[in-house]
Length: 474
Ligand code: ARG
Image 1: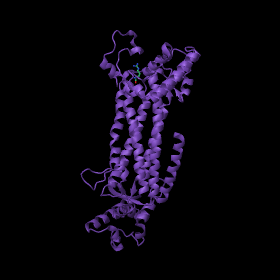
Image 2: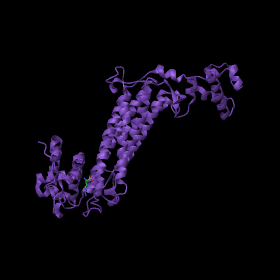
Image 3: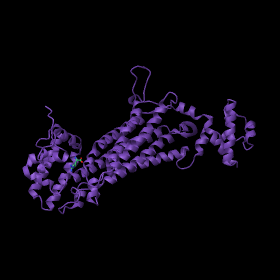
Image 4: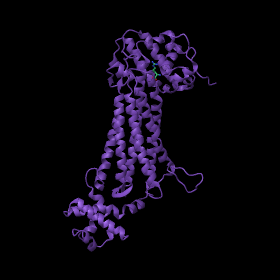
């Protein structure tokens, strides 16, 4: 039977000064255990470190410490093997849950563990540990996504794309160049995630409820034991600071926005009008009504997830705005949106990586579109510049040629040289050689440009950066 946990008799954490037990509805309303139980592994790690720290200052004897450590291990094992134990617990939060479980096993000596510490610093510490691990997991997912993009860029090397701005034909680029453009955005997300990991890497333990610890615990040793690089500098700030969560959610919102833009390109390119990419069966769905349909649902859902991931960032910013110094219970609202955004972001990175890997292109359609003569207009202007005409004038000349061709309903690249010379005497018979898709591509020969040699260079660069990231993420 799934009994609903109730408030009665559970408020041992703070009940001393109260005449009445909490209102049942309010008790349920204020409980965080249903979601902060996810922090249990971190809470138990913090409890182990704390037991050792207060043993050193003489609060626990060594046999009490050993008893507490053994009980913590037993709690970890049971929580792992019997999740329904947690479902039925009436605990207010994860800290309370551990205390109840310890007291059940050890009796009153268990209460000693909570000496000189506060749930305010516990939750801040647990949550920081969660965010550090979470950012690492999502970073691994991102590395897989970038690897998939680099793989696609490699498989499609040499295929041109009608590059667009304002969704209008602009200049030719390599399809691989377009793909690697998306990879760059995800590299920036890795940087942001690493910033979030860094901001979270400070240990608040020893801050007490707000003023610091009244016993001389070794804060540096506690931090080190829990894998933190730094200790917090101010106890008031430490219990009320959630900037690490903001940084993490900002990184996730950026990642979601980038995936959404990638998704939009693929949805467009898979439409019949473009036909540049083929939708992989494994990442598409059909229509229950129209038998011919194959829909880009994976990309659409990836694009759609951006709303709720971004909402989590707004949610925490609004929760934090206007809070007075130190801990306020509003801060409990930090966890649910962050957990949800993390779960979604992890799934989004994974699915996007799979969809990219499974995507094939239609080189014939890409080539046909890239052969649009309009894409060579800039190249023609540059031809005139190379022959001494100031660019603004060259732009004007080619603009007039294109307009004339449009009026005559013909391709301007098919105009005879004699006619082109009437627009500018600088046009010569070598123009035909210069005005090709290949020469237009090859001309953007600067680092970061779309010339094939540069794109091959960029591919190698991406591979090297991926290796570095893999090493640094661990
Ligand atoms: N459940 C609380 C939270 O998530 C833990 C800290 C509670 N502290 C307190 N003084 N009520 O923020």
